[in-house]
Length: 240
Image (cartoon, rainbow, N blue to C red; front, side, top):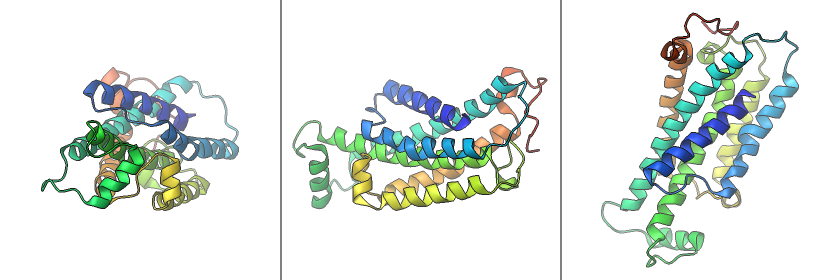
């Protein structure tokens, strides 16, 4: 449930922010299909592996404490990644020369000619959407490790419970998604451009920053402090 709610909230915040900034639209219908990997498979697997537990008297509060920081941090980082790629692609290369094969691929992709008025905006939007979907997908996989930490490295929200299956699931999903980014049929099906160096040179550093900020938010209960709720009972399985 936490993974699903975090993804929905993240998408809503990203769409709102990008639209207000006037930077196109952050998702295409085909990219929504990535939720099968980022939400569908993890949610089904975690439900199957769930252990019987007594009812949580603070269920809604604990859901908010997990979902809200995850959504805010992921959306903020995602919007930054999207905006950087959108503005960079819209401005064009520093030298003003675009490789012919690059133009040909995007003409085929967008159905527009490089001479059309909307070609630059289409290229910027598609490239930025690819960067955003790549970042959000990796973040969704890693978020599972916060919910079910395999070690103390991810134990800022809850203690490790000894179950290594979620970590193995994350490793498999990351491997499948990364391999897919290198396969034209995969990227085409999900409305992504082919994997390119600029995507990884921005997405990977953004993931590191995202991990550090989210860890800090969970470990120091920043949401509770901001709302003045530090006196309320927190999760019984806090990682500290």
